[in-house]
Structures are given as C-alpha cells and as structure tokens.
Length: 474
Image (cartoon, rainbow, N blue to C red):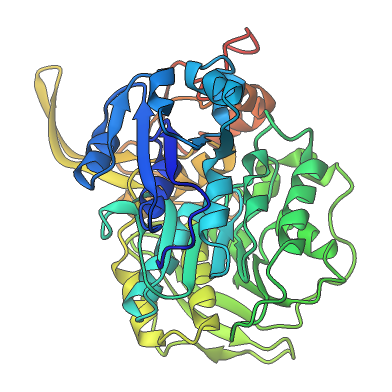
C-alpha cells in the first residue's frame, strides 16, 4: 500500500487493541513521515503484536500520551461510553484533530480502487474470502477485515496494488467514510437499535452508502453493486435504487426455503409489517449467480451457474461441485458473494475456487477450538466439539446452530420448513452471552426462537460493549 502524502506527522490511536483500529494503525505506519503510537486500558495479544511491529503502546489513559500528537484516533464508542476520557478531553482542549478510525481509513484509501463488503451478516467472512482470492490470484490487494484471518495472521494485509478490500460497517454511519467502486451487500435486516431509530432509517443508511460510491474513477471495473437476492432487505434496497446508474449483479441459492430454515422474515416479522416489502420489479439487468445442487447434511457443497436474466438455465461457472470447510447455507451465500466479486475483476476461476475450498474461517467465526474427549463429573464424554462463534443477532445465532446440527450430527431428521432435529445421541448445547442491552431488549422475541435447534441453552450475563447498564433489561 503506497503511502499517501501525510496530512499529519504524529497520530495517536486510543483503544488501539480493538480489531478494526489496530488494523488501521498498522496501515498508517505505511505513510511516509508518519509517527504512530497508541494506548489501551490493558495489555492484550493485539497490543503485544503491535509492539512487535514497532508501534509503541502505553497501557492506561493519560493526557501525557498526547505530547507531540496532532491527530487523536478513537473508536466511535468512546464519546458515548466515556465522554470524559482524559485523553479525549485533553485533545479537544488543545485543539487537536479528533477522528474515528473509520474516518482515517477513508483518508488512507482515498484514490484506490476500493471493494467494500457490507451487510448485517457474513461481511467478515466474505471480506476474508475475497481478500484471499485476490491475493492468490495475483492482485496484491491491501485488506482490512473485522476479524483475524489465520492465513494472514492478522486482520489486515498491506499490498502494493491499487486494489483495497475492506469490511464496511453500518453502525454510526461508519461506511459513509468510504467511496468504493464495488460494494457487496450480504443481507439487510434491522440491527443496531442503539443507533438507528427503525428499519427505515437503517435501510436509508445503506442507500446513502451506495449513492456515495466512486462513479468517476478511471478504473477498468465499472461501478458495481452485488446484492443477495435471497434477502428481503436487499430487495428493499434495490427498490430505492431504480435511478442508480451503476451495474447491479445478484446472487441466490436455488430453493433456499427448502434447504434452510428459519428465514430472515421468520425471525424479523416486523419487517413484513413495515410497508417496505418490494412490490415492483427488481432491477437485475446484470447477471444472476445461482448456487444449486446444494448439500448441507454431513457436507457443505454446491454448484454455481450464471444466468443472464433471459430465462435460460445458465452456464456453470465451474464444471464440478464446490466443497466448503465451513458449514451452513449462509456460508454458501458468503462464498458465492466473494466468487462473484472476484470474477468482476476477471480473477482466474480455478484459483479463486481453490481458495474458497481451502478457507477454514476467521477467528471466532465457527472457530472449532476443541475436538476430542472431555472428563466431566467423573466420566469421559467422547466426541465433543467446542465451537466459538461471534454470532449475536437472532438470525445469525439460528443459522449457526442450524449449520452445526446439519453438518456434524450423525443422524438428522428434518421436516420441510422446520429446523433440523437430531435423533442421535450427540447433543447440541448453546452457551450464549447476550451482546448489548438495547439489542437484547429490541430483539427479545426473536431471541426466544433463535435457539430452537439447540438441545440445551445456557445464557450468561449481558456483555454491555459500548453501553451502560441503565436497567433497560437484565
């Protein structure tokens, strides 16, 4: 990633141990003449890794950290959670420039051919898949991902080409700081009730993001929007973009309702009542990429065909089934989105298919932490698998549990339109820590349905994240 002309000389990252901000801090070191420092409340594996690459990290917060600093970079959560933070207050008193790490990332990648992945679910996995595909295909991209990619050993990659891949988060309108040439929208349903008033406001944020895409850049790639045709929210978005002048491509899983339940609408009934369901023809003048011959029980595989919108069955992208290491129809959707995005750049098909077949996931995204025998209450329990997953939205939880049940249960019975049920002795135990008070309250009824596939459910205390406990829910 060639350094751009520095607008500042010393950038200090507060809370540098966070996932996104740590990646941007390392990108900032590539700018010629730039000094980068950071601090966090406590030491972590991330802060130690940053120190190993030459970024000084101090533990704790102090106004003294700002000596010689001209720009303070923060997480959007800081002003809400800790508005009187000593460094934030001191920076404002001294007239220093204060920006979020998303704002700074937007500046660092300005002038590049940016490929952004957005949506409620799957954007981290799609971003990682696409980053690896383009790396393997020789595009040498710079990448920013919201989770650690094991092959990179980090949540970022520094490349030397004009291509940048990033995960574009909608919270706080963070993705408005990016102006991509290509956007993937994986799914849309109401999320972040602590910030967005309702689904309409949430949908409007995505529309604003798309309308802010790079339409003038002199790139071989035309302005391109890739959306999940199986997501009602994505179809709502397209209905608002009838006058948008870019290219629209869609992807879909054939017979989705037959191979996967519950659907988004089953967990989000308020969407169907909001008067936003599309009733007009959807603009899909571009190709539709369809996954078919889908297999989910005991394996995850599919074939891909490309349809031109003229009613033909379509031509296969590759003449064999594609097998994934990750389970679940949602990961078929993720892989399909990444394949479509890579193909818009004419990436070699054999290369990108090999990459997606070898992809074993990001950390904390169906991350298998243990397989074997556990000694519990004086007896050995064999055939135990411990999976760590970041899913915290009802839909994501339901899909993750359904995927685990179908991929790893030895004997699965399933009625059409219902969750898979295990008839073997292997039980599915879900241990869930609710994430944020506002999300728990807003989606409480959906959470009650999300765990239906599990045999046992254990609920931990709510993790507040960027919120304070005001007694909203417990």
